[in-house]
Image (cartoon, rainbow, N blue to C red; front, top):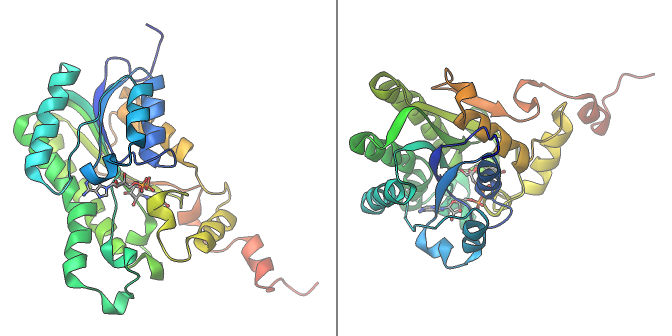
Length: 274
Ligand code: NAI
């Protein structure tokens, strides 16, 4: 077998909807690096069918699971360890959805029914996956669980709405569960805070085009692509990152550390008079 960073590693990848999905790129890279994994998505998303093409390419199967349903998640984890013939080494949680954003509800007029759904789908599902894996002892020692997040957890982006609260919760779950799972079985839990990326979920946010450009111009390296996010995931799933846990890791071309860039100054016409 050719050398791959993820040879002999088994995993579950949540959230590949179509070719633009970050999870799709992660699956392709994990496959290239020798990993075996199952793919999963909500039954409704699977009906679109694209994920079956990815499964074929990665020589694997798709197991449907609504990430808010503990029954579905139990079955998913049982079936995955069976199909893969062993415990899991990695899990990618790449799930986000806000009915408030979908229905363009202003932040000051949120539906609380929707808000709870946002939290359940986008954040609490991460806890559910971890808790079920913990209970079933489904992850190997030094295994790695990664969730995808966005800097709206720390700073305000008005149109990100209640997804900001969901991401803050997701990142906090990574720290809290990372502690318990680390002590218990040396399992690592981290979140990657990714640049704006053109995907179905991303472009659903109002004004996405503008804040994609803004982040690109502010970041010294420009926005990080889905492909480079996939590389970062491979690193975090690999043995090269064994001592990294309970972190929120910015993968954003430097965006999170910049106050202002020269390009933005120019655009706003605030250059020093020459
Ligand atoms: P995407 O739309 O391709 O992926 C979102 C996925 O969540 C879809 O596959 C969807 O079917 C799945 N999902 C929704 N409800 C579900 C449920 N109840 N059960 C199971 N799966 C469900 O979009 P993208 O951008 O690849 O999103 C992946 C992750 O990356 C999300 O957590 C998102 O918030 C995060 N992220 C995205 C950024 C962007 O600009 N696109 C920036 C930073 C983070």
